[in-house]
Length: 349
Ligand SMILES: Cc1cc2nc3c(=O)[nH]c(=O)nc-3n(C[C@H](O)[C@H](O)[C@H](O)COP(=O)(O)OP(=O)(O)OC[C@H]3O[C@@H](n4cnc5c(N)ncnc54)[C@H](O)[C@@H]3O)c2cc1C
Image (cartoon, rainbow, N blue to C red):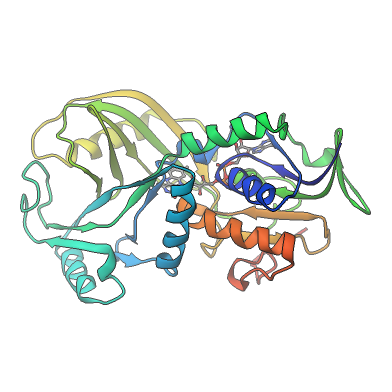
């Protein structure tokens, strides 16, 4: 079987890339192991403009968000929903007030509150907070729709890809019965552990999340304070998460479950009950400089990568896919800050 591209991994990256390449008339096969190590299945898919303790607007966020909103609306998985960031202390509140005066931040901040209960009496927002324009992406639907489409088109291979089973040949690569003009690694943090891109400057980070039901009051906004709680209606919530840089696996832990429940309950002024219906863990494919890896291996011209989407895959993926398709099909350059060959702390082997 001869195709233009073999894509390894059908997470957010592989799903959108396969769609983008097929839309340009390219033939693809996508190999996935059944979402065994899928960050995309674990993520809540939140899009939050201002993040971190310093409450800053991520570089390029307005353009990335606009592109993502358009692409993910077409895919029917974009869910606009405001985010209420509760300030943790006085310092953060004064930062929030300053940000609200700044022109580039204004489109994303709807309202700043300064006192507990000003916005919603059921919350423990002792230092007030910022209501921001936000969204979440229905990633399980995106993945399921993409898989169904790829299966119907005969493009899906459900199997484990082992990099050592791949052979280079002058016109591309060969793997099992597939011959492809090129291969593209979209296998999430597994690329940091083995294969041709393992020596890049990766910083994978594990995180856990819970699906719960609760009698906590549900507003029409995401709660955010050192974590988040996404209301899904009918008393259902998704809540997370944490950051762990060792023990990179998909095993949820009792310790984190206890912490996530306590943090969720801490958002509310009155005691709330919690029933855990699912507990999941995944590994974010983060990079040392917080930019994705796009492009071609320095010594293997048929071996490509679209990976390293980090903690904000939903914001980055649509732009990364547009640029990768333009690179592969039209020969357009990759933006330097995302080029896999940019200056790295370790060399690619
Ligand atoms: C706890 C947590 C919370 C997050 N929250 C958010 C959030 O709120 N907002 C946001 O935008 N992002 C969030 N992220 C980040 C987001 O999940 C990632 O950026 C994005 O999903 C990465 O997509 P990907 O396709 O690159 O990788 P993945 O989703 O990991 O997909 C890789 C695919 O490749 C498959 N695979 C791997 N190895 C092989 C192999 N050898 N053979 C065959 N198949 C293979 C895997 O099973 C998987 O299906 C979060 C991540 C985690 C873990």
